[in-house]
Length: 135
Image 1 (cartoon, rainbow, N blue to C red):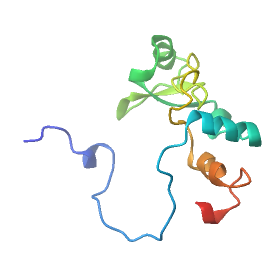
Image 2 (image 1 turned 90 degrees about the horizontal axis):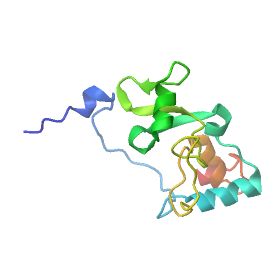
Image 3 (image 1 turned 90 degrees about the vertical axis):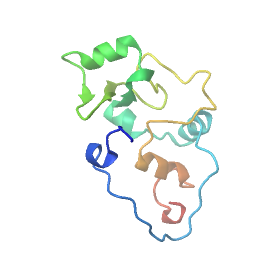
């Protein structure tokens, strides 16, 4: 017997269903930090995490300093229903585990802290979300 809690009761997910979709293109791999860095340099794009100045970080990836700051009175805290997710000031694609991390040596790792709007800008040939056909 599976003793794990049902995801339906924990995260609000609905029962799966089958749907037809229009054909679409998808890359065989994720966008790497190096690829995203090239895009940012070419377009000057600022991600939403950079604009908001924070993002969520999985606790196991965060440093003790980042965890302590998150849990402090001035920190953003944790997601109540998923306390392993921390609201971290300074977490962006350039600093994926928080302000004391970097992507140095992780150029081939997937870019993270990328929103739907950031991804839409990335796939647009002009570095913006003007090209609906590439979504």
